[in-house]
Amino acid sequence: MAQNESPSRRSFLGATGAALIATSGLGAQRPKDVKVRLAVAGGGFGARHHWHEHPHCAVTAVTDLVAGRRQALAKAYDCDQVFPSLERMLAEAADTFDAVAVFTDAPSHAKHTLMCLNAGKHVTVACPVALTLEDCQKIKEAKEKTGLRYMMHESSWYRQPCIAAREAYAKGQFGRLAFSEVEYFHPGIGARSHGLSSTRGKRTWRWGFPPMLYPTHALGLLVGVTGERIVKVSCAGQLVSKDFPAGKDNAYGNPFDNEIALGHTDRGNICRFGVLWNVAGHGERGQWLGEKMSCFMAGSGGQPRARRGVSGRWQAWNVPDYWKTDRLPESMRHNSGHGGSASFLSAEFVEALVEKREPTVDVYQSIAMTAPGIVAHDSAMKGGALMNVPSFDR
Ligand SMILES: NC(=O)c1ccc[n+]([C@@H]2O[C@H](COP(=O)([O-])OP(=O)(O)OC[C@H]3O[C@@H](n4cnc5c(N)ncnc54)[C@H](O)[C@@H]3O)[C@@H](O)[C@H]2O)c1
Image (cartoon, rainbow, N blue to C red; front, side, top):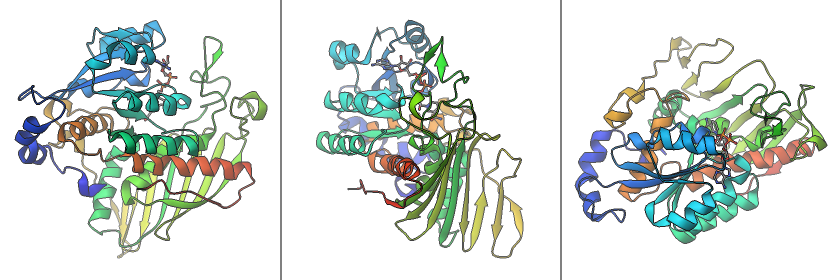
């Protein structure tokens, strides 16, 4: 959380630069230019990241099952070690990389994460952690047993308003933050006619995908601000679009294209979180209502970014472009997409490995953004039953 997040690049290098080069298990023999050697699996979203821009990282191997995507990865990261599968890459070239960025399909995340951890590789993985509580538990156990680093690549965590809200929360500016509303809208996902749900006549993993099995863009705006855990949840599901392949026509038996949950947190607060595939809206939005201050992200309904204090006056909420500052290495100070978050995520994973510390979005935070959605979907399937969310914390 905010406490272990380096406030600036200068302090990161100033405080630890010399020591990490002398002591890093990654490269005591690589003075000055200690490099994390990263392999990337999955050439869709996985080809649009920024690890190679970090001065302490080199992409040394890439893989995808699809030839065109392998080429896209090789080109994006200027890497000529290319493999036809993650399995082959681990079997044939494991000594050429320290860590793997797993950007395969969401249903494969758990299997691929465990494969990499068990091969002795640090892992950063696209969201979500897994689709079942059992797999969340296996990943937590594998991470703890191996002592390797694990980070979920959750863009909401480093959206600029989320960074600003996290820092305001750490300073106590909200007072008690009693109620958070966090949501993710992506119209059409999972529907028959959506390009991401079927390609060249073949169904993809997104066909009929349960909204609440993709909860992290919403819950990143809770866990990434307050660090709270959802401990109980009740969820409502609905089917809006006739184009959504409900029930038996999808691999998940999922009847819903929109899901909205009410969560109770471990600090006695309330969080409404939602994932909606079929509304006329788009993107991620959080609003945080505290005793002393409330902050509102801009929304697809044209709502402005705003802030209100106890005086009752509304003010514009000025959120800096953190990506322009020395929180990032100079080579990464550009708007990297998804609310400026992508380069922060790449930098955080690389710097955690170089500094030999846990990434800010560690396995516990990652599961705290994933598990409540898994239970919420179960609740929706049971007509909104109030259900406990197990703790995966240390
Ligand atoms: N904002 C965000 O954070 C964001 C945005 C988009 C996607 N994502 C996540 O990123 C991940 C990837 O998304 P996508 O849209 O590229 O999905 P995708 O299904 O288009 O691509 C996944 C790729 O993984 C490859 N793959 C699967 N198994 C493999 C194996 N064993 N070895 C090598 N390659 C393998 C597939 O061939 C495919 O090209 C998903 O988990 C998604 O949820 C996150």
